[in-house]
Amino acid sequence: MSEADGKGNADALARLLRFVLAAGEVRIVEDDALVAADGRGQPLAPAVLAEALSRGLLRRDGGRLSPLPEARAHLKRRLCDAQTPFAGQHRDMAAVTVLRDGVQERAFANRLESPLASLARLKEKSGEAYLPEGAFAAGERLHADFTRGGLQPKMTMSWEPRIASRQKGEAGVGRDLTDTALAARLRVARAIEAIGPELSGVALDVCCFMKGLETVERERQWPARSAKLMLRAALLALARHYAPPAKTARHRHVWGAEGYRPDLSR
Image 1: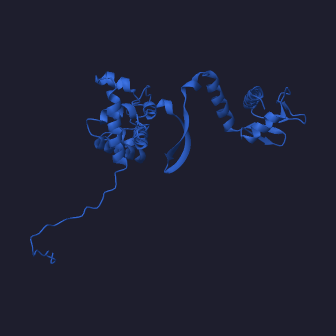
Image 2: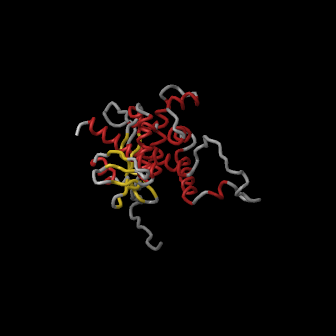
Image 3: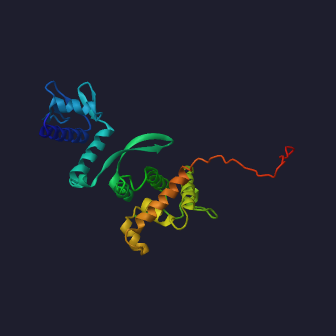
């Protein structure tokens, strides 16, 4: 199938979904034409109908078609792609493993959204990665806990009543936090303490507030290209916090004069 045929089928599928969603339910006659409730028909290719059924977008019950929830979601995704035709050049989609409710799941993430992505692509003169994989994973983990704890600043106005769910003498915001959010905030606090006060600021700016390195240098009045070095040191310390090195057993040596015997009664 050529690219033009594929695009034509995708357009036909979108028209079919819009038609069924608008009608709520349509009937199919033997020649694979859609007949609406008011008697008006619309021709339909059998391959398009088969694709809609196989992808779980429509449900067929005898001679009737009805939309499934995935049909509306499919149209929204297609509309977003149509409205942003140049967005693809600013995406670097890659498969990642995320932890959701204690279960590892596969997902796709845009690596270009994170300032760490450009840093992770840098190479040393020896050819090794400038930012080790463990350090990059530590930065992503800090960002995940920061997001899960609800620590991002709100960018929109909140229309909830300020005293709707608060009673006299209560703590306010902490009362509505879930155990998951509280645990995430505790992990963030421990991570910042492990990084140290000298390096924690740049880690928060880049990993959590998604600021670029040039922005960090300008705001903190640092020399050019210094934020890259500070961030690398911060993430290496954070990686050691998340995965501390194994402790090696130390052998004790006791020196004694000639004829010395250890006291075994202790």
